[in-house]
Image (tube, rainbow, N blue to C red; front, side, top):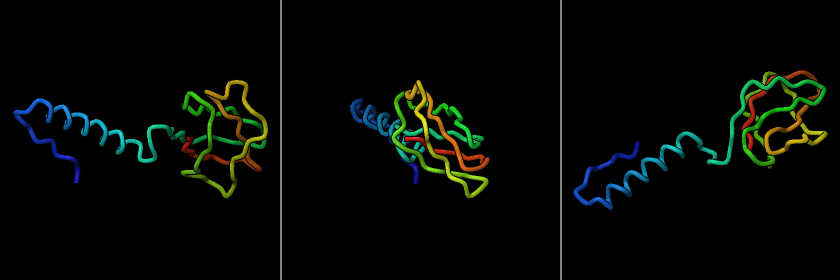
Length: 101
């Protein structure tokens, strides 16, 4: 059941409820936390592909959310701008959606 805001004559209570609405909305939009980014339909090959991960810092890891083949992405070389990109490749061509964290 979603959070139901109850109007109150107490301003502090209204501020707390407003904060809860914002917090619960963020949780619903990013169930794995604020510090994750979903990147969909990444086409990988046997060569490095610079994937923009959107974290603003180096990637700690990733989860495969969707894949069109039983092929897994991996890293071999670091990207020159790790705060924005990660180099990924696969053993054969695959399209994946990854949740970066």
